[in-house]
Amino acid sequence: MALHAPVLVMKDSLKRESGAKVHKANIQAAKAVADIIRTTLGPRSMLKMLLDAGRWWPFI
Image (cartoon, rainbow, N blue to C red; front, side):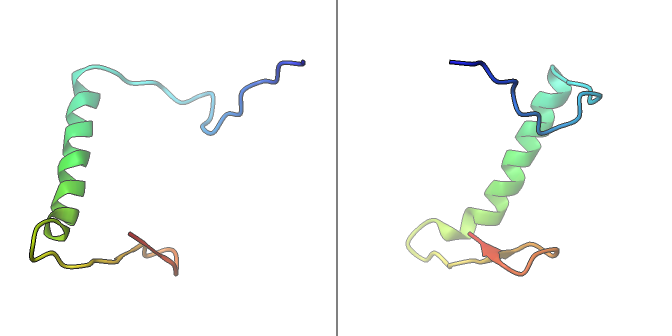
């Protein structure tokens, strides 16, 4: 069986970041998602449809 090269989604020239800066960015992203879906939880939940401005199809 031949081994294939990995498929690269991002450019090789991109810089990897790590540490506290990335940790803080991940927490902020999680909080943003939580704020968006907060009202979909619980007994009085509301169904929401999220729309991307550049696309015509919705995602939930």
